[in-house]
Amino acid sequence: MEKICSICGATFTPSYVYQLAVTADKRRQHFCSLDCRKAGLGDEAFRTRRARRIAILNQKGGTGKTTTAVNLAAGVAERGHKAILIDTDAQGNVGVSLGIAGEKSLYHVLVEGTDPVEAAIPVRSCLDVITSDCTLAASEIWLARPNPEQRSRVLTRRLNRMQVSRRYDYVVLDCGPSLNLLNQNALSYADEVVIPVTCDYLALVGVKQVLHTIKDIERHLHHAVRISAVLPTFYDGRTRLAREVLGTLQGHFKSKCLEPIRLNTRLAEAPSHRKTIFEYAPQSHGAQDYNRVVDWLLATTANQETSARTTAAA
Ligand SMILES: Nc1ncnc2c1ncn2[C@@H]1O[C@H](COP(=O)(O)OP(=O)(O)O)[C@@H](O)[C@H]1O
Ligand SMILES: [Mg+2]
Image (cartoon, rainbow, N blue to C red):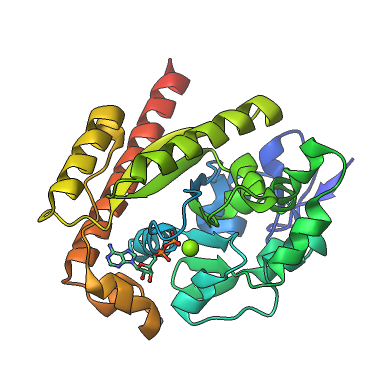
């Protein structure tokens, strides 16, 4: 069927995938040539990559999940990469930490089918956030439907329908401290998990639970999730226990165990000022340590892209 080029107005019969694009506001555009596509879509013209989908997970509370999710997403955004941070915890700490309360939250996306793009609030340059609040707890009940496959995949369906992962470079999911349906939804969507672990005696118990959960998800939902990093948090090198726990984590997870995030009061203060650690105390140990995590994330993305290009070329 003939179409009219949205740029030059020429009439043509589309034969290639690149000749059609659906824009953010859901308009269909047609392009007779690659030049017209580039003229119409600019930088987005040949964007085929999809975002890294990272869940920050540990079933134990208070291990630094929200702190890590906020500063990781904000850190990559500060360096010019588009990121969306999605709060899947009904405590709604992400919104509180950044001083925002969205009109539409993850509850609306999950239960009412609100377009995630509409629910996303731009909070900084390159950083959008979908907040949560206590209403999210109600979505647990709504999610608890008979088909176990369906109830764990609602978030994936909602986010995929609007091609969220094509609009961003990073989708970061801040998970709650339990194994509820919301976390299962987050894991069904994520490709990889970062596990923040406090450097205390019970740390390894928490990590074992996460490993178990990931295996369960893989078995029941046939969805592979990779553990990309274990991140020791609240590290106080003056105590022997912290040094021992760090040694155990490094022995077990080898290069997947990142350099620890030190215990740092500035990290605890930043949320009360509605700021990321990079805005609140850019010279602090907290900012230095999270900058290192951001470096790691960007470096591993670059490695993945290089190996994908090598494979494609081969
Ligand atoms: N490295 C750190 N040093 C000091 N306080 C921290 C550190 N990381 C997080 N905090 C504080 O500890 C509390 C729990 O951290 P949070 O990220 O909310 O954990 P979770 O999301 O796993 O429950 C918060 O008040 C946070 O500001
Ligand atoms: Mg939290």
